[in-house]
Length: 224
Image (cartoon, rainbow, N blue to C red):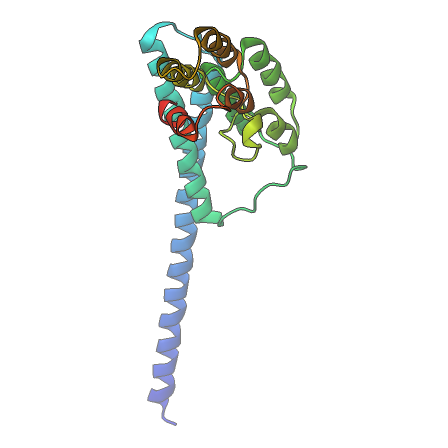
């Protein structure tokens, strides 16, 4: 074979080496940029979570609205961090119940508990007790035990799920409709409405409507 043939292959090989090196450097640079972006989002999330944890609960509509906006912003930041990590490292395997938890896991659980308290699913004493257990928790199983009955029945049996003030009011509205149609007497309405307002689980709310037609269950769902 001629010298020109081997020179052509040598030049070709050199081009391939240069292209491979450029691609590797580009991948390293892209990974560094992604890591910096994740670190920045983590810092923003921690700062916002700290502000929510230590800020005083303001009264009035504006205070509640501002807190909801901060909580929504925190949730968006967490979603962005997860998306960035998944793009960089791939989708992580779901944690096992015995795995250790992070501070962000504890803060997420405390946020869920606070939201449940605002919705009327937990009273103040229960909120304080569960928050204390949340900050002392070490594993995912311990955190799950604190929220299994307030997360809209994701894993808990529906009958054991805690109900909100809105659901209690919906049940009373349905009872009031039954009273107007003559299905309940005034005394029965008063007794059942009291039970509905004092209900803590979905099972207790269902009990006050159990002997009404199925259409009332649909009214209850629409009222809630």
